[in-house]
Amino acid sequence: MRGDLRWAWAEIDLDAVRHNIRTIRERVAPSAVWAVVKANGYGHGSVDVARAAIEAGAEGLCVALVQEGIDLRRAGVDAPILLLSEQPPELASAIIEYRLTPSVYRREFLEALAREAPSGLPVHLLVDTGMQRVGTHPHAAASMAAAIAQRAPAVRLAGVFTHLAVADDPSPASVEFTDRQLSKFAKVLEQLPPVPLVHIANSAGALAHPAARQSMVRVGIAMYGIAPSDALDDLCSDLRPAMELRSRVSFVKQVRSGSAISYGLKHTFSRDTTVATVPLGYADGVPRRLSEVGGEVLIAGRRCPIVGVVTMDQLMVDCGDHDVRVGDDVTLIGEQGGETIRAEDWARRLGTIGYEIVCGISERIPRVPRRSIDN
Ligand SMILES: *Cc1c(COP(=O)(O)O)cnc(C)c1O
Image (tube, rainbow, N blue to C red):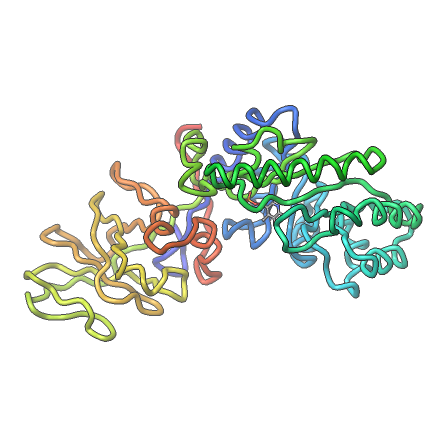
């Protein structure tokens, strides 16, 4: 029985995660792979994904928040855990207690860490080479590294890294921008003492820019079997999606041509048809707009359009003249009877990226393990 508490659940294929990590490791060798499991493992369940990634040879983990690192430690995960951005200075003692590896780029945060660290706290210096989100300016990187050295033995510079802004876009202008980021970063490295870990690439960088691989890569989305962008789809053809979003038909009825459905009565039927209700909605992460942009689900291996606006807890689909019954399997994301709907398909329709789709599957959806048949 899948999803014991409701007729909607996400099946997480940890074999797919392992396969993806192994595949990416082969691709980027000799660079190491660190698995990015922030945001509850992009909605897949951070602890299970982290364990699977480590089993498949990932050498470390990356998270966004201290709490995400603490959750992994409390679950017994022992691998190195890198915090991808600075955190509130008052969390310095928690960072140390839970053996998290902080990123640093401001003196104040470095001082807060150094005050708390007994000795040898590894830190990674984040240099902003063009993303303009967070990080030390390239001109200030050498002095920031010197400040870290001054706070020895409390802290030590274990890594230096940057983040790419347009690695997922193969257009000439973007490739040129990425090259400029790489050369700015190379100049920074020339001014620093040798640093054990040097890293640049996210998934897109790791897949599409071999020069960005360095000593390790930080791989998130590709590990979940989702392409960073449509343009990089081909580079992901050997990866397997790790999440399926499934449900069961909760109600079936016949509707009349000319009648309308759901809030606002925005969809009018142009023929008599069979409508199935599926018990999940926007509070579960199915965007309200998905019907408007041509969203579909799979029932009995056939594509059925979502009709009417998606409501908070339920949505309706037009099943035409198929014989549909309460309890029938519904696949919202995944494969059924040879048909497939991917997170990227939702993303394309909605004008967003696969990341936002899987991260948006809410906590209300139980995550259940799935065993894939082929491995
Ligand atoms: C989230 C994040 C990543 C992972 O990016 P993907 O595109 O999912 O591989 C890597 N590095 C940093 C700094 C991030 O914030």
